Length: 191
Image (cartoon, one colour):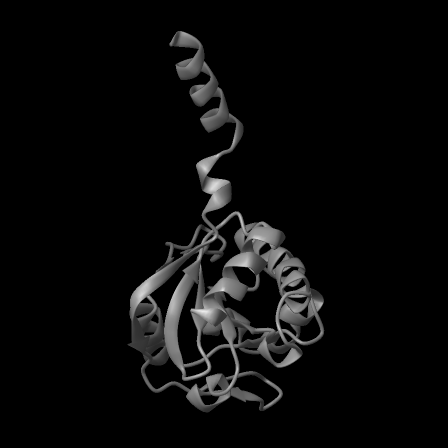
């Protein structure tokens, strides 16, 4: 009997639970508020851009040293993997929204393109950012500046999954394993 308990414990430890959970499907779709994000090139991202396509929305800031590059790099791999599991028109678009428009508005357009040429980046007015943050159950906080005026931003690491009807349907959670994330996204599209 001890051997069975020992084997069960070893199996539980061998497969970390966090690596298995790549996303959380919402019980009910969440309607998003009106928003109009843009970049310095005059391109825009509005609710109409989420219609008829799956969209992954990530919140962050351009000088983020870790969460943003890690997440966008893994999303690139996850989207590529998803492309092998779903129809081409169901491969999700990836949109980065900066929560720091004061520093990022002049340069935001190219940020996500460093990770994939089809990824898009925007920012917007603080009230619209805040409304989208609230609707997606995300968060951010601008920290107090240091003596040089530099400040950091704490922000969510989760990614919001917007369905082709423009509603929030799920949240992707780190560590964004490409295979498990692709599996979750494919499963989400058929439920």
